[in-house]
Length: 247
Image (cartoon, rainbow, N blue to C red; front, side, top):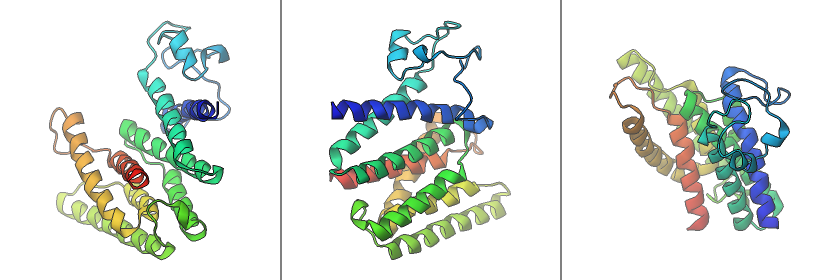
């Protein structure tokens, strides 16, 4: 029952994450505004808004206009539930589980919003900086990258400085922005967790995933195509994190 509870609680959180994904880029309220259909904008009754079950019960079609519900909704609920489930298996105390559940919520919001809208909200990146520094200072044994607070601080300065320099030089040479300001804050937040050694791995992995994004999404081969690099960084960070936990 505890395994199921953690999985389904994750699915409920995933439902809220998808609300944030839809509404934050449009500047809509994520707390008090009632759920509504993406197709016809009609209010969704609670009975048709139960995570996972409602999608299956309605056979993937909305109850109001009978249009297909995007699979994105089900995917986000499932993947969040899976992360919560895995965290419950991997960690042996609730403090650690809560910290990593929160970490994955932030990362999923960054990955999916940047992928869909090319936006990185600074509040999420600053949350990574804050949680990373707090964990490394007070609960360093929790961080699977096993780094000191000094390593975290120095790597934050190096990583954000490197990205800032790349942004400046690209703008100077190409006359267009090669990196967004959000990427600079995000890399500082991620490196607050990784330290310098794993920051280098993060750069390699995110560069590879960025290239994959380019060829998969840029079908017209536009040289000025905007790669969702924040999404690449977040995805690469999760791969590194699980690799350090499992291996």
